[in-house]
Image (tube, rainbow, N blue to C red; front, side):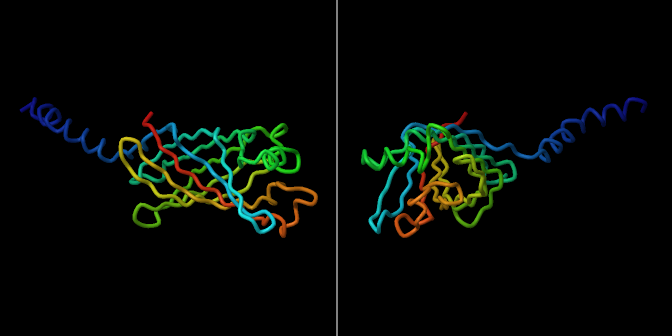
Length: 190
């Protein structure tokens, strides 16, 4: 009988260990941006719509829909890559009156608070660092799982809060304050 407690402990050890592992929080899956992803912006200029994109941006994501507390999204955007496919617009857009990409070459978006809002839809609350200013920005997105998951999202950035469009360009009758942002990011597992 002296060995009975040891035998019981050895028999129960795997069971106890499995309970401990089951209780451990799940880790979010880690992803990096895949080729073919897009980051676009749009608005109006004197009532006429315009659209552009940032071809040079990089995203990393930790995301598991069952464990949103561990989710994190980081996006770095090279502002000198901004293009509307109109040379006159692009020179002004990258210049000192707008993005001032010579002084502020990179914008960053970091989100650490995620909420499921139904179906495949989520909300991320993050901070955008742009033009030397940090402001909260919400990203609404859908998540399509798979071997290369897809995050398709939309946000609104108020350009004047970041000092984008100075002098005459601060007039919201020329360019409204809200600028629409949209993204479609394919991810590769890390």
